[in-house]
Image 1 (cartoon, rainbow, N blue to C red):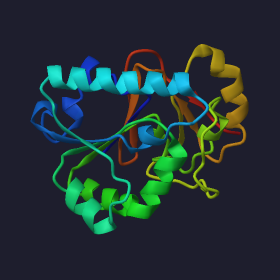
Image 2 (image 1 turned 120 degrees about the vertical axis):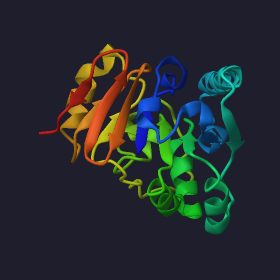
Image 3 (image 1 turned 90 degrees about the vertical axis):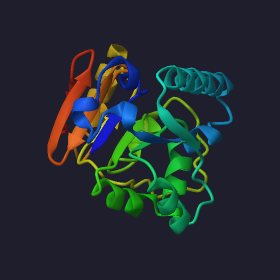
Image 4 (image 1 turned 135 degrees about the horizontal axis):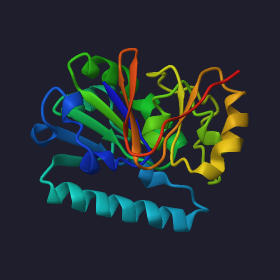
Length: 219
């Protein structure tokens, strides 16, 4: 099971219990902030906004008494990563620099670990960069207005856990540009605003949260 979103508000604005093996209140959450640790160097305002979001997000999870552990997975061996993540019911991957996150995903064998854990009913939840790496590639995130340090990543193929692309933080002003971008993609593009998420269970894809569904089919 995967839940892909822009900023994860649904964790406290909407009930996701129907999509989980057990109630969220009973789940242990691995809150991976790795992507946030290497935000673009030129975007100081964006970096400050990101860390303010993380601070407020943790305050909300504390208020709701969620059982979470903040983790940075960079530098872990594949064996260490597997041993660490095996203790959790939900793997929640925060936003930030998707290229750095993809680099760490490859170095730690995160993808194969997640594939194994998801067979054991572990749920993957992506927020922005965490959603982008679940897609076939980072092709959509390369159009960001932010200037990300790519940390030597030239191959932008990602985990390919879903057969489509996601654009996070959608606003109506992006519509025409995304319609054009969708024509260049090898799979459909789902645009998610900050109140939406996609639940992916096998071949079933369901939109949850507020707003309306935005799918830009490629030609």
